[in-house]
Amino acid sequence: MAELEEHDVRAVRAANIRRGRAAGARFEDKCKKFLESLGWTADKARQAVKFIGPGRAVGTANDFFGCVDVMAVNPDKNYTLFVQCTKDSGVGRKKRDLEAVRWNLDSQRVQVWLPLQGMRGGIRVLRLMSHGTNEREAVWVETLFRMATGVEPEGGVL
Image (cartoon, rainbow, N blue to C red; front, side, top):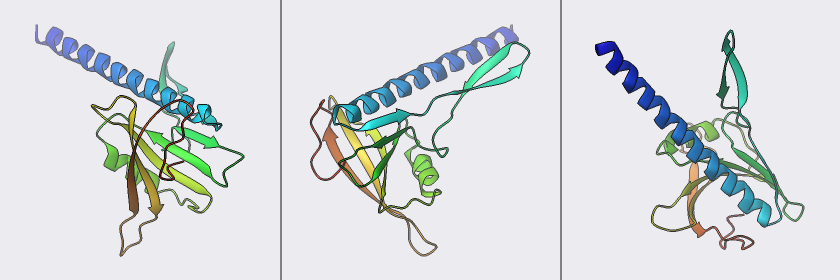
């Protein structure tokens, strides 16, 4: 009986993880479509298939540089945009992953996008402004905007 209960708990956890991944994928798609509506050419990281046994395959994360979900370019801008889209509360870990890459912040913008609860289409953007050093923490600037198709947010977010 205990084995059955443990199996049920594992099945519920697996279903919750799948549901969370699906919600995250929908948010990534929404961010990509928003950027495309503003004239950006955007690409989203795709899952890689990993074989774990005979006839068993699973999808694994395959982010750009191991930490970026959406990469976008615009011929009217002199930089490339790298966006980590997240719906979970592990923002600190995602920021540390982005800080570990040595970005050229003059020609690359690195951002974390999170949906704002209670604001339809609201986005919280954290932009990496400078790398941390041994003496100083990395500098992140926060901006809020509402995602509206074809309307570029104010304040130099993009």
